[in-house]
Image (cartoon, rainbow, N blue to C red):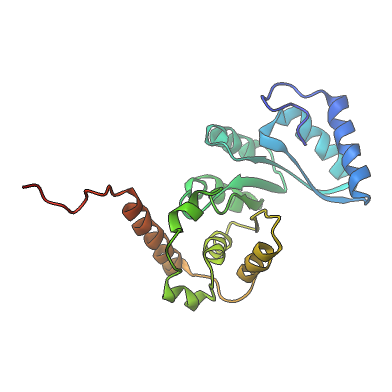
Length: 214
């Protein structure tokens, strides 16, 4: 829900409730499994309303989201004073800021974590373009880059689920491959990070790297 608008500010409680009721009309079921406050928009107002719906049994789980680094401090502060059922945050193999404070806090307080942007939007696809998945990834039943990125994300003990978001059926099928088979352990995760970092280092080199002057 986002009755506070794109630029934040105060949310009109009447508009917020109308937005939720519209969701019930669209979904056509009660309870709705999860509703979250989008981008921490006026959490005192909107999350307070969601708690009313949860207490009434009309919503099973409630939470809040952000994918903006400038809001991470605010999210941490809110998580210390509130107890949402879920949070939705950005996290990827090359974007591991959440591991520092938010994930440990979510584990400590028993909060589920939904991961958005597990592919770093299009960033990771650009990085691995022209590269094949390393042979050792088969040790974790990984057959594609999509599965490589997703298995890294869901193997973190704080993560409940990842939402890769695609409209392409073939991508859905490939992504589902990350839901089966072995997951990397801590050593495997470190190996995956090192591999991506090595590709990133190569990607940043200029055409003159490695040439000596005369």
